[in-house]
Amino acid sequence: MDAWAVLVETLADELGDTTDLEHATRIVLRLALAALFGGLLGFEREHHGKAAGIRTHMLVAVGSALFVMAPSLSGSEEDAMSRVIQGIVAGVGFLCAGTILKSDNDRDVKGLTTAAGVWLTAAIGIATGLGSALLALLGTLLGLFILNIVPRLVDRCERHRD
Image (cartoon, helix red, strand yellow):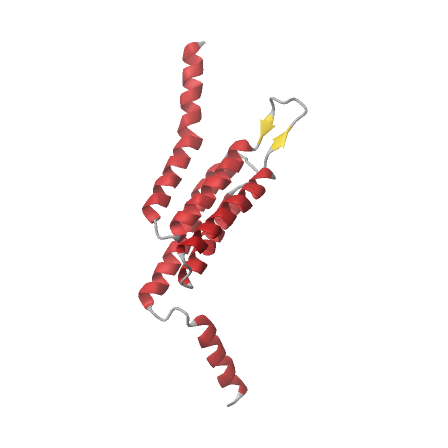
């Protein structure tokens, strides 16, 4: 067997774990939706000049989706998936801790909302990776509502109170 035949056969074997078109489409769709939903939240953060923007949120969402899709596609049991999700939540929590800055004045904390947004983005990626696109969409829309509308409502209430 010549080298090209070995190379082609090896590539087909490595990339051929999804021979069903429907299954391959589902994988692509889940990853694309995770990137889209994460990008929407990231755009909002970047638009408001926050440290974690589009790329960070997209990477967290796609990474979270991949982390839950890989064991699912390999036939892992539910207890394994539970451990994977626990690991994502803890790992992203550690990542989020890096976005939070506290000044000498205990009342001045920055980055807490961005950290919470990244954490939400991980949850959205997990939901998307598990095939719950509607749940992920609703989480994204609710996150955008909280980041955009809630501050305006709070400002309006404070102005009305004064």
